[in-house]
Figure 1 (cartoon, rainbow, N blue to C red):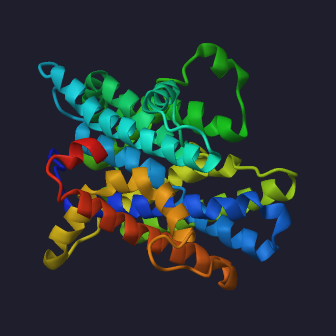
Figure 2 (figure 1 turned 180 degrees about the vertical axis):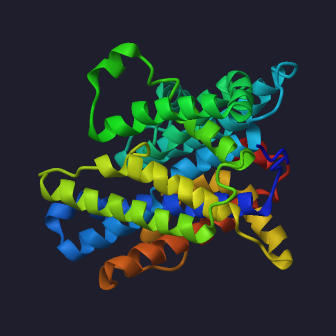
Length: 348
């Protein structure tokens, strides 16, 4: 029933990490255009909406990949490892939170206070993209609990169907059809992002998708992303304020698209000459995620010695060129930090 190979550090996983990171860039660079949809041409909104719809799978891909690589092991004798794993994320989070607070305070004329920056980080994300890092720490804390659940899901198809069915109803169905009683049952907190981690593990280790051809997953991804695009367009045409319901990471359309994308990426074969560079770029995605919003602002300000005339470009070209430029600059900066001994512990 199952394929018991250890995913380990595989080339497809490195590709998945890089594609997910680029997708996050597309989302964040498309967002200002999407939010300004009442003041721009319909064409520009549709382009930003389309790129955002395609890229929405990125954050679920990060979570599913983490689950695929982390779950399925016996951690009952290694609970101390959870502390070190959490610290590997928490220390860079603290470092980058301070930098982001300093950046915000610099432009608003507020004093640069390290203690205050740490205090803000303890209360929650100081920048909106950092929510994912806090969530990841929370799931890491739950890993000893999730591990036996992952093994049990793999051992029983009925249990897996029950678990993922409940998870889908609680998180996905309620996006468009709220079910009030679910809030009173208080099921949503635990059965939330940990479900994506477990889903990634299950899709890799079980044979549920073994007979599904890549072209079939490609069609599913296209149709689900198209649904995201059309639903988003429809909801925003009826709303006076930006409506992101279709973009929610647990919406059925995004969830299905993420599963299809995960299956497609799983089948990617990386040529031997690219394995090492792809692996290295993948290894520095964490600091890229932390710094990318800062780099976007710096590129727009021409601080790297080049400027992008975004206003003179089409919407698609401007989003893609800024995304590619940001990705390239972030990768270079992250690579340079690796020259400094032990820097990975601080910057990620």
